[in-house]
Structures are given as structure tokens and as C-alpha cells.
Amino acid sequence: MADQLQAAVHQLESAGFVGTVRRGESRIAVRVERQGRTVYGLDIEKGGPFGDSSLNFVLGGNRIFSSMGSSDRTYTKEEFFTALRDRIVEQSER
Image (cartoon, rainbow, N blue to C red; front, side):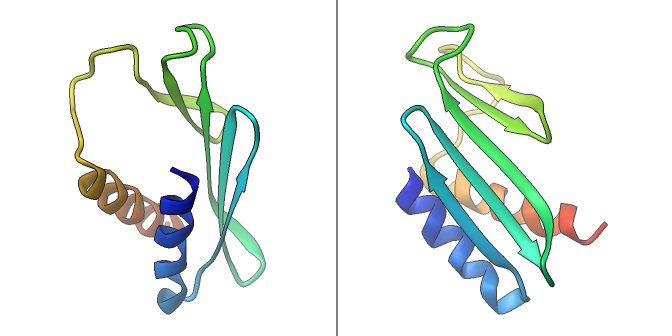
């Protein structure tokens, strides 16, 4: 997933963003900057209160989605990265 996220943030360079993806043992941290200022941060954590088979998506310290085996929305890989890119651009333009 980290490699796919790195490729996704790389696509933002044409819009003036710089993205980094850092991998830890159970966490991936994504940061997007514009002109030296962080405009978007997302942490993806494995495990947590729902066990090791779950992923938690944390934005600005707030859990925004947790995969607990079912969800209201299921994304394909392509849909997920498109939605993530769109959200990054939308939030950074605020």
C-alpha cells in the first residue's frame, strides 16, 4: 500500500504539491505539502481496537474510517486512490 500511496502523491506534483510517504511497522504516514506548509496528513494504522485484521484511517488525529469487516462503502483500489487524491486537493484548497 505504501508504494501505491507514493505513486499517488507523486501525481500531485504537477499541481504544485510535494508528498512524502513514510512506512513504519504498523503505520503508514502520508504528508502533502505546498510551499513548505503541510496541507494534508493521513495516517493508516494496522490493528488497534478492532484487532490486527483492521485498518484505521486517521486524519488530523481523528479516526475517519476503520475497516472492521464491513463498511458503508467498498472501494476498488483505483476508486480508493482517486478518492484520496480528490480529497487531498479539495482539503488543500480550503
